Length: 296
Image (cartoon, rainbow, N blue to C red; front, side, top):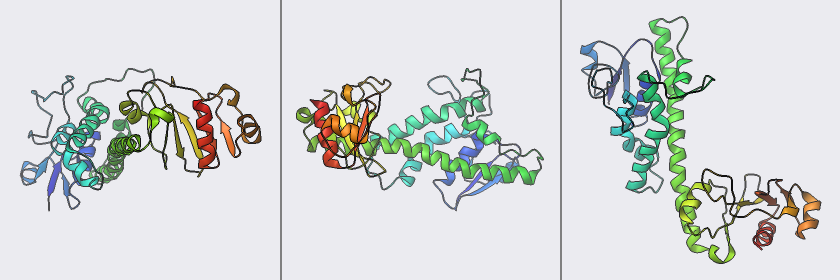
């Protein structure tokens, strides 16, 4: 059984997510909140207190590449991020390189803001109060702050943080799942000739497909959505742009059901979005007929 110490008193996203991270690795982890050296020095892991490796409350703070000091969560993630991914996503077929990329992406896209906030650095410039992960944790701090109510709020916040962290990491893991899935379909099908790919499920294909299909052979993707219908969706040219490699026919725009059946000459049509990036059919065969027309 592992033991972990974080500081007592008012909490923030740093110590909350530090605890969530380590509980995500060690299921039987015992966590104590204390500022007593005798107590925290007896623990296996000490974070955000005590002046040790995972405490950032010192003059010579460890800095990230962008100059923002690490907080305890950021420091722990550097050492334990890989272990967290391997423990929680063992069933996913991830390479060592992919796991490292996931760890680094989470550190940059998610932990950066927590690092900055806990070190008193404002990196968000807005006229509005942005509801960040740090502010989300703050709502768990009770108004009637006693040791009991603060401890209760802390562990309630940790339960939420565990879910958030897992979903944040899962999103990055899913990218590589989708990446590998698309890579196999590119090999099995012949998009250089057909200019479309068929998937048996809905996936987040945009980023991975753009990365894999440098020749821009794939103009449309056909997939089965959650309703059981089959969709035809165009592929964007760039990840951060809505510009498509090819749009659906102009005469389809905004039409649906029988009207779209008549225009396309294909039965079972459901709709075509006015922006001409998405259309659908009740059957796989109907969707394939639509995508063949769209390519032509």
